[in-house]
Length: 294
Length: 327
Image (cartoon, rainbow over all chains, first blue to last red; front, top):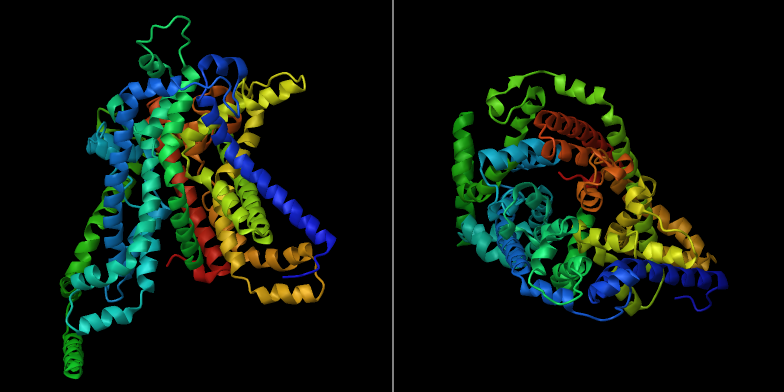
């Protein structure tokens, strides 16, 4: 720690502070303004445009969306997909990674290559689309949001490297004492691997929560729209808005097109904001480990 | 007791390795020996077979005149006709250019921003300040592009969007962003940085934190200024990581960021000239035009070029930083 920082050093440091502050505001403003703009009346939004602080505070948009069943259905779909999907992904990814990490498994490098190749070359959207919609007939089912994206080769290699870094002597001494593979995995390896598996789980969970492309391709049933896809739909058409405000009979009522869209967006992000400190810690840690290991 | 057990294990494996086995028998032997472990991996292997390898069979559609009624095995084989059609139409020039141009901009600016942020955050002090600003800067990464599209509306909307509100303060006329393709490469790059620079800076910060602090101390003793330390210590030591990540990113340069572009631009034909990439074009010809053969052909080209590129890029990366190979 230098005691006498030169003037130019301090100016530079000050510049850094300012730049970081500006970039942070840049990151925050879109989110903030959407929240603020959702908390006004539609009339105010039309008149004043988007704002950083609600002019004419109003919870109308939120009241409307919470009275209608759509948001609950979408929340249900997204929650189910995230919980079930993450569980399945974690189980099967861990299972495969573990096998690939055990040195005495003779074909593990062959299997690793088999998986690695899928990262290099893909069959393309058309083929996948036909496979899933025509041959597997998964359209308009909730499983189409879970199964096709269930495993990630990338996450699998991350976990494999983690398992491989666990000291072999632990497993070896257990083997000498007569333990079989299952015992070693469940009673010895898994308990110490829980943080790593949880991190991978969070990576998957975020992917499931934010998923919308698969819904766009394969889901037409309104009751099965996940949250992110709902947002996309309401950006482009007014059915939802009309449905949500269909039975309002106030005089001078302006259908709350924009505020409802904004409110829905805010409600969608809600869980991420609440869980954010938790998410951030694990993601950063997972990324660092992954980066350092390559 | 453990002595004899160890001896027993040793003798047993010696005896086993001396047995002569044909290749098939040794395959079975291996599976049986580690049957629990192979069983564990089986679901995953099956999944990759169904969802990654089976679609590869569908590549044949690129060479067919595909009719949904007839399916893959009934449609007529037409060789390279779909490809000829694609190249002759001239559309390919625009989408390939857009894909490469946008991705290049993304790689350059995202990397620059991430490095900038990493350097700046490590140079400032104040634990609370660093923690809060880092949390804020990483936050955008967790939002899906459909949500971000809403945010973008708040900025570029013709009536009441922030940018136009700002312009009207100076009496400048509103810009119709949604009808003006020329602004969008710029907007997309800004969005990409907003979304990814904070998260991307984490890796660089990890690298910087691994630099031996004694190097900085001896530089201070020699009278180096902060700027000089950054220029001559921090940046050069970041170079390998930057080069590696950039090389790997180039491997995906033919893959447009469909998620971002479709969510934000959607089906707005006015913006296609500067924002339509290979992936969005492919998507539209599949879903809107129902032209499976053409889409399959484009997809195949993209996968093929991507494959060659990734192999090339990975071998270069291996030479630059051998410890970072996947396996």
